[in-house]
Image 1 (cartoon, helix red, strand yellow):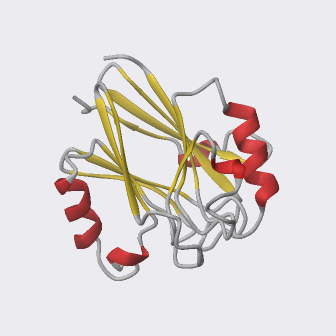
Image 2 (spheres, rainbow, N blue to C red):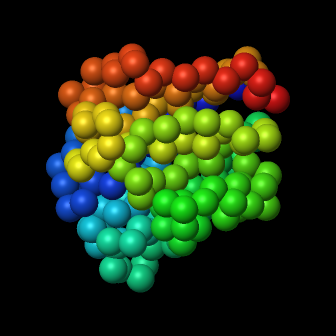
Image 3 (spheres, rainbow, N blue to C red):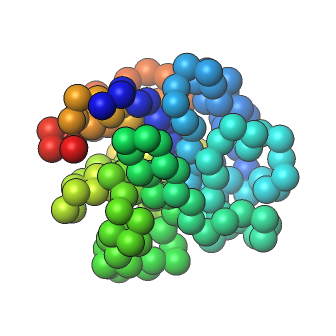
Length: 175
């Protein structure tokens, strides 16, 4: 399996500068950059060139898709914001979406809380919020996902690109 590196951010809520900062830092150095919605920017903004982006409940521009699926030769990544799957109440809809897409990784946002958990073959990842964190962890974060040798490693980083090691996760069963 080829090694893949993905950058995942979400819930920037009008903070175009942080989206640009993360994009500029990683573009050309990683396989893909994702934004899981609630940017509150125009879907036609040139910032989105080279970024997989979906719409969230605060994105009133109808130009955003609700879901995206990125297929690499050996990896399928399903992406959504999460609000349309009622993730504040149940994981059933999100898990069903991931299953339908046969996703190795399912990216979501909406809750502003970093999380990485596995259900079946799918690793679900919420990068937290780069602008408005909620819950116990009040750090503004994004995620870096490295897939290699049947492993998936998820690390979280601050807006200054510093590792936030308390949240690092590793999945050993990726096939």
